[in-house]
Image 1 (tube, rainbow, N blue to C red):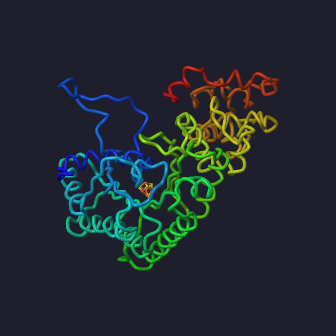
Image 2: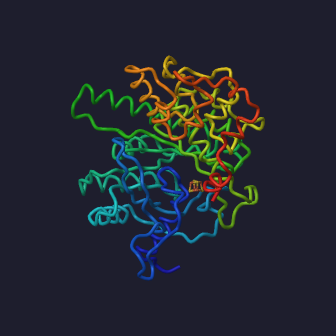
Image 3: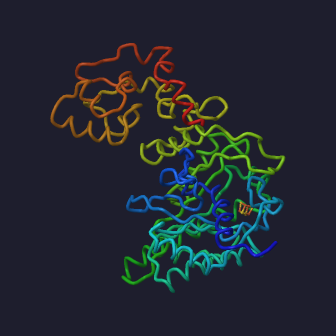
Length: 414
Ligand code: SF4
């Protein structure tokens, strides 16, 4: 194979990075301005969006250092046995690309991952070197997210954290048995061991910065991980259980859920079809319930059907409320915040507005209607000054009444 140009390598390595969901801006329609019509494109490779710790949405150059790999994870297009076209950047090339895109105002940071070349340590060294060039030679102060390799020497992962804003280590699959079957070169203990080390490094360096003003920062945007959904038989309950253990055990900032997408030339052990995208969406909703609505993992699991999977036609909060109807209706003028957060249709902002408003007046149904998108969804679960739902929560057809119409579901399934 002849020498590839930088633009050819960029095409290959940006495309290869799109399977990592950790900072994906997915779900939009494909549009481009090729042929001189219009302006802009949603198809271009290599740029994704992420949220900075202060909530800003930032654009990142998202690429792999290389898509060569000595591992053979069945679900991965870059696995050793795949016949995909390969390319490799040097750390200097990635740093130069980042700086030149940054100067043109295309991006505000870098998301760098890699297949494993030669060895885990060699690959990690190359990724750290890229971050070093950016930080030390260019004094680059933009956002850097480095995927780290759990099998690499912990000292190298530590160095990555000293240069990067965020580091992530993918757990890949929700169960150890799934990992053994689909990623035979990876090891669950090693992955969690590496996460544990990053967690303690973050805590130690935070502590050091409280005592010494000039102590270095270590991954100030924390660590995250990704789980693939639908490549193995793990249920939503398995996935949520794993996510909850990861949040608690390693203080992760985010767990990303990525619906398995069949890859060209796929291994025979993989399913032929991708799971419905709505499944990924329901998992993100459950994740929010655990992180922002005070639900325990076991409570979100109670919202699943007999097969351990969340219903696809209704959101998990509504599914939970329908199963635990005896907890409702709740009086919006008296119920505590943590219970109001369980009312389907009332989000965190709506609940805060209800709490603020009820300090000054006794709330009527129309007052609640002003803070929510769908009072029809809320009505069966609340009591207000002029509203008491009598038999609504007992109705056998309540689920059918509240489930979104089919057309809306298909939007997610597209
Ligand atoms: S280690 Fe596995 S998931 Fe990562 S690039 Fe290699 S084959 Fe793909």
